[in-house]
Length: 335
Ligand SMILES: NC(=O)c1ccc[n+]([C@@H]2O[C@H](COP(=O)([O-])OP(=O)(O)OC[C@H]3O[C@@H](n4cnc5c(N)ncnc54)[C@H](O)[C@@H]3O)[C@@H](O)[C@H]2O)c1
Image (tube, rainbow, N blue to C red; front, side):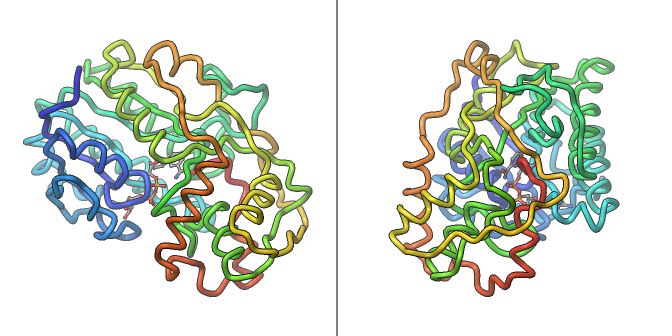
């Protein structure tokens, strides 16, 4: 099914990944964003070719969802409470990530929706039992967030099996790029490193830094999500979207040092318990079923990201004290 000339709903569309998906879809579709703006920002929607319709609503509000899904052909469901919030507050994650997904599926099930894409996460795999981690890798959620994402997947796929509702599950690995969060509980390793490097502060690496992640440029990720949505053969199934190459956190720190052109030191701190050692995607299914492969390498992506941060210096982390720094890489293989 080609997603052109469709009425498309993107939940969480004002967030990091969602807003890039809106940019891509807005070239040839009529896009509606549903977001409660708890984390997302209106300015993230400013780059869309055609401004999306914006509905400020909570994914837990069934009445609001009934209204919105009435006039849509395709749904991309990305609204989420992030991993770091799920650690101190598993219920918040459950209510939005799990029940919110069921709520949306129920609202959409009896509508004319032609495709429902649930954007899950590689977090559902937990630590790698074997690499690369393809879609048949065991599912071992390590955090309440991952558990809720897996429940969301299970609901989405069960709606296909039980009601014939056309759902597809996509599992992105670590995504990075413009609009990614540097501050607060959603802050991620690359924005933190860049902000600290540009502020002349040390880059804090936990343990030896040899833990690896499959970092994927956001433009590649959203292109893969759209390709997955368009693939009829994938309905009722799932696919990894990633580069398929892992890079160590230490290597990222070294690259940021070099590309930012600053001489900030790398500082090692104690390992965090539960930190995932290696995360790398099996991307064979994405290649064979979608013809997808990521095009932006880590050096190029980091350069582009640093350039973007430099274009608006206020995007840096404002007060990266050590206590705060301790939180930011928490055991997250992706989010
Ligand atoms: N960023 C990554 O590296 C990554 C990796 C794998 C998977 N994902 C998945 O991609 C999706 C988007 O992630 P992101 O990094 O862009 O997160 P994000 O936090 O930037 O975006 C989430 C959006 O959901 C909105 N939201 C939160 N609670 C809501 C609610 N109750 N009702 C309506 N909207 C609500 C937020 O305001 C925000 O705009 C998520 O489903 C996530 O699991 C992200």
